[in-house]
Amino acid sequence: MGLTIIEKIVRNNIGKEVRPGEIVTVNVDRVMIHDIFIPFVASKFEEMGFTKIWDPDKAVLIYDHLVPASQVDDTRHFRIGNEFVEKYDMKNIHRSDGICHQLMTEAGYVKPGNIVFGTDSHTTTYGCVGAFSSGIGYTEMASILGTGTLWIRVPETIKVNITGKLPENVMAKDIILKLIGDLGADGATYKALEFTGDTVENMTVASRMCMSNMAIEAGAKCALFSPDEKTAEYCGITLTEKEQDLVGDADAQYCRVIEYKAEEFVPVMACPSNVDNVKPVTELVGKNIDQVFIGSCTNGRLEDLMAAAEILKGKQVAPFVKLIVTPASRKIYQEATKNGTLAVLAEAGAIITHPSCGLCCGRTGGILTDGETVIATNNRNFLGRMGTSKVNIYLASPKTAAVCAIEGKIVAP
Image (cartoon, rainbow, N blue to C red; front, top):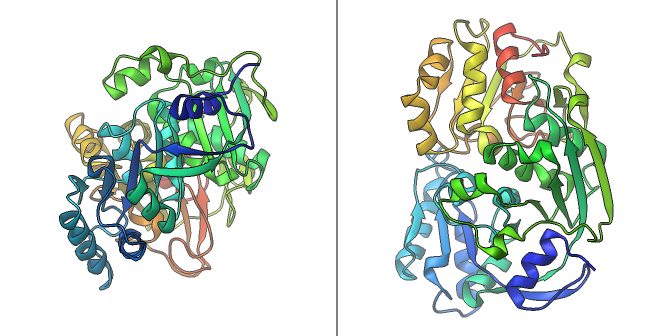
């Protein structure tokens, strides 16, 4: 009987075949801790009695949610993080280089077939390069730091097959929002999402990152794309036989198969205040907006900024609308500067910030108040995420967000 991608990754890691539902202990290839969680990880690590990290080179600490500090207590996280790094001889630390999920693949920490855990639910992002990656809590992270292992239950897999050519104004964000709307917020709980089809094969790694990032919004344990030449180029590697074999077998067992025709996708939005409350943009046109946010670990990559700039070139953001643009990493910021993207956005009236999580987690500027409406390209629109509980958050693609910024209201791209 054939295997799914997740079953192959776990098999390669522990040296024996596995089936969904089995409890196994895996050897962890890499871990990521971000600034919000480092005080709790450090405290729990020492409470457990550990005196050294199992492999300091495999641990990465990234300051991104709280950079620069916007509340007095934020600096405590930096102090504790710096003390932990020095005490346990960690080498991989990023203090202002960008968002953790962008950096983990961009900086080469994650490779196809790896098993990676992070103290953030959107750690599922690294499935874009064919890695099994998932978010965990600080207790589990402390345990991994001390032992290098973690037990998991092998997930069942939902196969999502997408074929055909996408319409011009449809982006990967529209696809994943549509899927989340169809599945529901709990429709893939503790399951792996395996993306296949020629539409997926033609996607950039950045587009795959957008989709794997938001898999958690349907409850998925992980999201996986088969490594290909685009993956190899992005990771700066030559794929090994094992990495090339990370493809779901024709006779693999899936708990569900979902089929989509790319031509049938349309621009959509997730409406307040649930990510699975997804509607076509054409059903929402006319609502006035106060702010637009383009950025985050979902849509802060170069192709996202360029897509927005293409629409905004030669135009102006509507009066009284704030457009905040936050590149996902310092490298992306520099690339967008070199190719003129940031100049186009600035000339259109955008506020361009340093690379960080920024408004996505309601920090470092741009929060809103009662009755205000924001169109955002990030991954969550929960109550209170970007200000008060009476802020209306609509999630959309960079193209949709950009055209809304020009018109000052919801319009279809």
